[in-house]
Image (tube, rainbow, N blue to C red; front, side, top):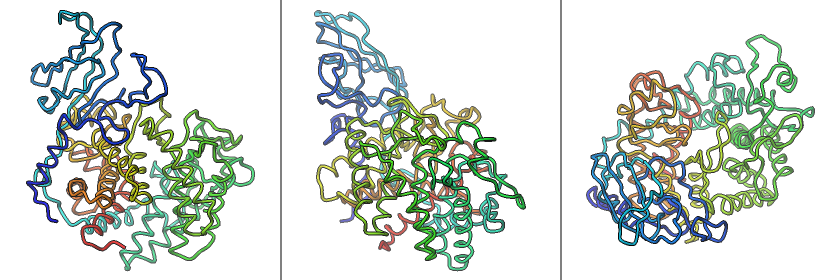
Length: 550
């Protein structure tokens, strides 16, 4: 059934109304949910409020303000960006802003909650909170058109990656370009290069041979710096590695380098990254037929098999010398789950499917139940509870549910809840909060120039990023295909259109950070893996739009 732009606009605006408060299982827009865990201020049992560090909302929120003994009347006052006060009374200081939410315009909001005397006069201030109310999605015709087709955008981006000097360095010399500073993250960057060249070879026959050779060179180098039997993490590739050799220099033992020359980080492996490497090896084996890459992938998989925790996941950080966990945070197993699935598909061995299911069960029990969608990045410190949420683990949950549980109504309801959470916290359809203070001062002096629609990465880096935009686009796309919701598909296309407009029409580069003009022209502090991820998602939406899906 065809849905007109005007009908999509009406559906979109209705979605953000004040009566859209609680969803099926967990996501209360901006608030909490009740169960029998720990007492809250009212003596009731509750999960923590996930939004303690949230600074923007599209959907109707509520906040954790302390209850006042023997008081059952509270006055809520929300002062909007026009200095207009919106008020209502409620029986709980943690009530949703339902009576006033539709009346508050886009912009900065100052909220206070006061306990009232029996006669209705203010007694004491219970709490205060400030936040930015984001503009809702307004339907596809409210945003500029795409600059080129999604397929062309993808091909241009892959071609840009292939021709980038730091990538061509792999083809010419078989080692990382020491002048590309992000090669200090070898597992992350080399994994991206392998995936990119395998994909590029499949869509550009003219460069296919060189693309696959480039991928092999990158993979072979990563194998050469993989830890051997002298490490407690034998068979795993390093997450951090700064002592690269130059052309013509003799290779050195990676463990010896890290012990003698490396910093504290280089003693650690972040356990999300070996799984990504393993998945890349399997993709390369499939493209080339070379089983040495399967052998390397299996070694990595066997390490996960031998070191899984009782709760189904793994430590976030492990010491390459002692083999001990070096973090109190558990791993969000978002990269391990698809790796286990790929191992199962390759071998037919049930153990990998069991590990995948157990890791997902951990996410359901320990993440879906708390909504603590923790961002875990190699260039960010581990975080305290709820202080650095990100869309990535929630995206991953949606991907899994759509692929494995689309016939399960409860699981699909959870996916829809997650999609609302992602949009609420990490999508900007129009204007960014003027009080965003994360990141480089130069970029943040020009917030009105930031480009939207866009996705933002994490609370600790609350900025528009190409790969965040594309991953969220992918979540909208896959969920829309599973539940048939045309509004989700329209949102996916709107984000994809934005990516095409951000792409350099001459070089095919998609900038990483979508800040001011200068940041965009120089690539926005270009992370090549982000361009690669975005190119892949643009190819997926191209196939969906063109009806070319397998």
